[in-house]
Image 1: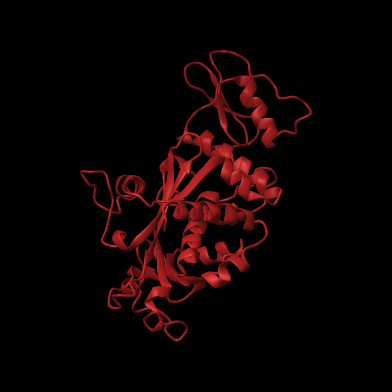
Image 2: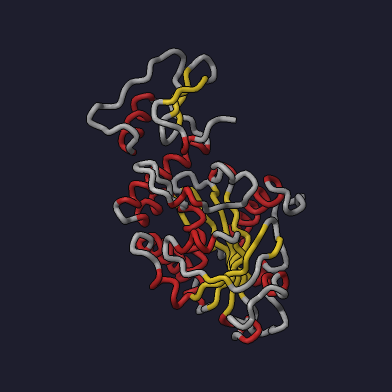
Length: 328
């Protein structure tokens, strides 16, 4: 298996393909053509910085077009934007996030889910039409994330809306977590159904989740995402962006109570960037350990850290523009 581009050290070399040498520096990898020697970046550019890596790209003229390079470039750009306290512009440059409000975009969401949930992870059976769907999709709004410029699908997530016209129609977590919910803290059965929603079916395409520990997960956020490592610090902008997208939809629709089944440590990870997410029950087994959690939309945006607010503003603007254009 090729080494992870995001974890390689500056100047590290590895065997290449087709007689060339593969030079892997801290952010992404290059493969030289034949025996051509790699040109050095200008001395004035500090080694390992984003500008240094881009200079190498331009001078070598050939860049591995696979997911390793693409993800590393995006992570390095977002890392630089993070340091300048503006993730929003970096996200806008690399991604298009939109609610899937027509059949074509919803089918794109279902294809992503089929690729991740059925082909990659084997969590759901393969479908002849290549679309992964279930009975909750009809009462859901979906977020689709594409790579800006190429239009390549990146990931998706959905917000299941509780039905206020059918109180007996429970959300998925109400069924799977019925025995572990802390109903003294919050009882979903006592809430207005029209104020509730559940986040589910988060999925990120393989090329955009090839980091250590992600091969058996639809998407992940982990401790290293928040550990400062100088210019190579990475930010989990894909899963965070998708969560911000469903939060923007929930806010627009007035869904105050948003529930989600999370990995036990996800609430702690989210807290580091200001997501005020609360645990509302005990752990269950559902494709690994999962914990029922909740966030309140009225508290969500005010609790975001200043670093994250520009990213949320960009995403909320995209969501609202799409709804306005669709007359919804």
